[in-house]
Image (tube, rainbow, N blue to C red; front, side, top):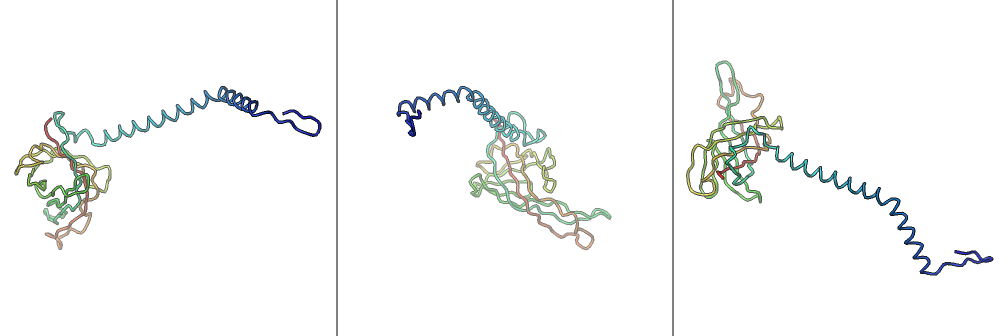
Length: 206
């Protein structure tokens, strides 16, 4: 703008726009590279976090619990119920001994899938059933919860979704550990039900 006497002469619209874009170009030229570097760094950090999360998820199940390489996941279900213990004596020692699980199985949408009971056995709603034997176990990351397991299936019955299953993982356990006290000579034979939840992953040959 130009001062003339006591008045100010404002530039016309085209001049104002020209000045504005000139300033913008100057600002981008001086700061654009720095802004781009900050933006790229932010994207890199987000990508690294994403891939680290994927890696952590892939390593969640310990290698000791992995089935043979020729196995693939058929289905994963969530269990909620109890671990049943009985107070027993072994000479002068007393302790809670596991009798059986008693849990309902739910699919990923929360619908009833079947049940889990003594054996250990899993039975789907269609009547197919597998019974297994634990071949590996590792402590749960949660010290107050029962171990994670790998179970090898030893018998089948019925026909249905569980018919081809050969291995079962028990992971993501919460609760279910035997009581630390309360079992003594006066309580031999007494039953204790401890609530628990877990995920069971069923495997079949590829």
